[in-house]
Image (cartoon, rainbow, N blue to C red):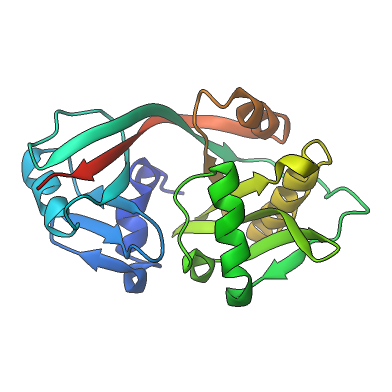
Length: 228
């Protein structure tokens, strides 16, 4: 199976499964802002980054996943830069824990999902993120306490993303259970689950490692803001 597209997953996903959710240029692509604030370039270089700026409103921020952190042209200001390991699950996913019943989330849940993401910061999350793939959640007395879903889709690979748990519900195994449900679904379809984690988030990285995810490649995430 060709893993090369995983080096630049956003570029390849927006050129394939998620093309309808993006804004495109020959050298750059990005998701529409109501979906998520993520962009990508075909290859490093100032021309591609300037093309991406042309797809972005002045003052708007984008998240870029890159292999190397190159100098930015003057149309971009760097706000943050963090190591972001990419992990992959090559073994059968765990059996989900009993007693936790996930619910399928849909467009009617978007406002609650955005509120949970705003509280817990799993990454950029827009009101139309739900359209990118299957999302599961855990509710107690109607309240959304945890969620996880499928985001980037490449031939043979599906990303698990948007993993978060309300602070009131930490330590109950909700995230792990939701991820295992999603990973097993992905594997039943013949695809391989993968994910990204901020390296400094040792708690999440440790959980994913215990679940069987292994490091594929150390990438970087850069938060950049359009100047002018």
